Length: 282
Ligand SMILES: [Zn+2]
Image 1: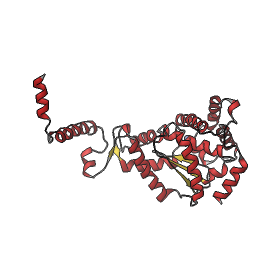
Image 2: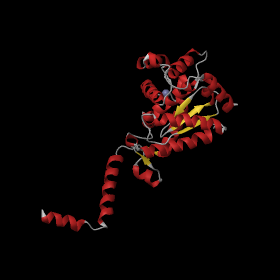
Image 3: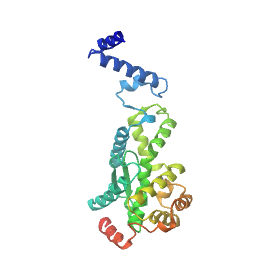
Image 4: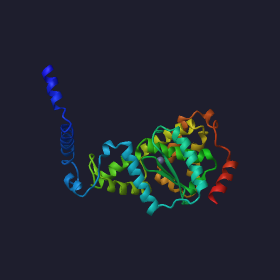
């Protein structure tokens, strides 16, 4: 015992630590990635590319990719609504919901997009986008908040990451092990704008969204009423195509809710909501 102890002690030269840890890290990284990456790892390193392990994405990496997707979206694809009152109003509702959500421990960014199509979407790492068309289509704050809580549910469920992983593998730019971060950002932008999420992801976001809505103090009927209204409208709004299976989702939500609790909570005053909307959207 004493011998082994003294050998261990003699190994504790300061210079040895980095050498051992670098060698260990390199051999783990090389053995696990070279065989499976679509683009060979040495080539990626040569190009200075950051390789992201999608199967084991940390919250910090998720937020970094979300931030990059956000910059890409705002610079080319979507137009931020230039009214600070509207941004403040949405952010204040969003932060209240985020605190009551299943994932309150990351920062959230809520932004109003200047677009008349009724839609909302979330990417990853706390980024949520609400169209002006959706704010206008809601009849009260509980309805608006229900959609925002649903989008927070997508972030809590890490749905965009799962979708991104599948899309990256299908496109041949990654394996389950890793991919080039810039390629992932391009895929993230494409997914945010054009690709519906799976039915399973929708049900999960609905379930988590309802819990969030209720815990934040809103009347849960906002969720059911708003979805029913979207289904009834003559031409289906964009949000139906980006968030599929709406009819079944209404019955699934109704099964989760106690009918006597539908009206208990805040946010059903449509007059005050209309006044707010008039002020912030005009
Ligand atoms: Zn959804």
